[in-house]
Length: 222
Image 1 (tube, rainbow, N blue to C red):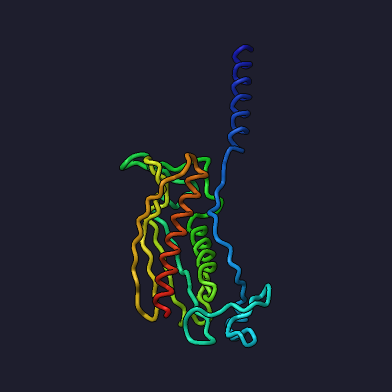
Image 2: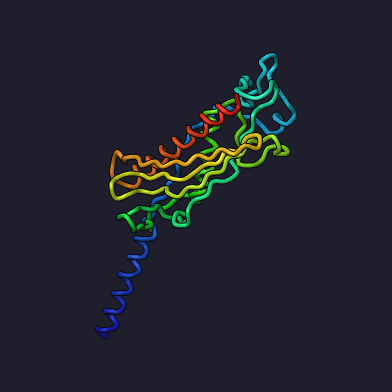
């Protein structure tokens, strides 16, 4: 009878522990810049322009967005075709490098959605905000023949034992058949300890990569 009571007590403890740990996850989403320009594919493909302004009408406010590159009446198009990460970054948990050869994946500090998806969406949002005269999309626009194309591969997007956030990889920008390859290797110091600070610092590094793309895109479209 005493043994049965002990088993029942142990089962109760385990049940309570499971309930407590089940609500202990924290989910993270990368922050991004909001774009003031909203336009529909239909208006772009139809060549809709703001009256007398030489720009595409803003759907929300009716204001014209000036063109920054390309031929008059033709809005530049940038297709962010792919953002991929190394295999050790594919899981749901944030990754932390514990020494020069070891990495660990968090069990309760998780990405709110797949990391590759977050990175692609954030990059599109940041580039859209930085390039208001360009239509930036995750899908080819129209036939796709006149789309510039961007692909990014990340080999590092994690925290490190020395208090730095690592954003590492390479991007490829294709313009008029010419391919531009640009590696990046950022190690940004975290201002504070913890996963919140890590995610914000990683987002800062990812924004820096977007700024690199922005500058090169503007240069080649002149």
